Image (cartoon, rainbow, N blue to C red; front, side, top):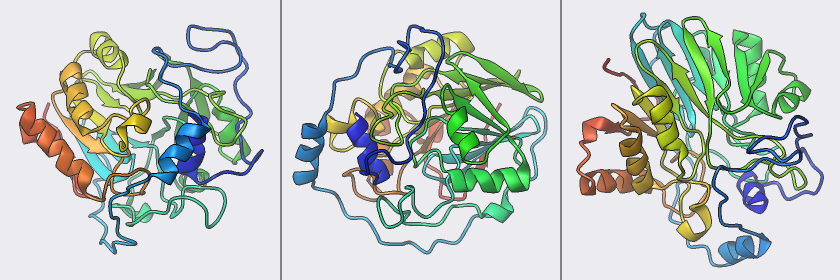
Amino acid sequence: MRAHALLLSGLLLPGCFGAAGYEGPVSDHFDGDAFANQEPPPQRGVGDLLAWITAREQGPWPDWIDAKPGPPPPPKVRMGDLRVTLIGHATTLLQLDGINVLTDPVYSYQTTPVEGLGPTRVRPPGIRFRDLPNIDAVVISHNHYDHMDLPTLRWLQRVHQPRFFVALGNEDVLRKGGIWRVEELDWWDERKVGPIDIVSVPAHHFAGRGVEDGNNTLWTGWVLRSKHGPVYFAGDTGMGQHFEQIRKRFGPPRLAVLPIGAYLPRWFMSPIHIDPTQAVEAHQILQSRQSVGMHYDTFALADEAYGQAPRDLHAAMKKASVDPSDFWTLAFGEGRYVGK
């Protein structure tokens, strides 16, 4: 799977920008050298990567959409209120109980450390950086460049001074990038931010920022636990037992933020990215009161066409008899309050 990470990041240069890795006790998902999923995924090697590249049938994407930003979100919401804003890709603003949390913030035009290589965004962020409210916490699911963007994190540190939460092994990446208020968590570890608890939860994915650091840092999802109900941000993930585990441990989420993009071709992407049909299945397993899609129509990472992920999601909801009011696809820059 490491070769897939390099393709998505546009980085094919040996020894560049890798993560130093984690040094710590062995666990059920860390063997002392590398991390592993709860359920081992099918292996994909360089041969599979080349087979995909040589036979790609990518749907059409625009070069650029000059979209206007959405309106500034409120400075904060009241105790008991919950609001979600889609900024773009996996970047969402979650506002609950007076606390503002950004997920996987990426404001950069390009998601690689090498100028001119790799995916570039096809639309601006849905909320301008200067229009963000004061950010209390940033949660980062894993260290791929389209989820851990150091220039954006440095901007956030300079302007907002939030607390940054990462999975095991990733504190070193941020500190070397000039980020200092970093807290590193294993699956099921938690930290308190005001009235909410931020909890690291399992995901089914992989990690790597170079050619020699595959899976030496952990990947994770996040639960924001409030007395008014949990909020779940899945990050990047394939299908797995973790959805049921999260529901059993925290109860049905008040809101689940689920990825719906970068899923074609399935033979290559299914171990690490759910597709829209599986996002609906995850919504049902979680028994989420409300779900919202993310991770689509920002960077052309896979073979589905621009706009295909929301269409496929709506078709999957119809087939599964899920009401469209239960699983949203927001406009970029759109924010909505979630019912209690």
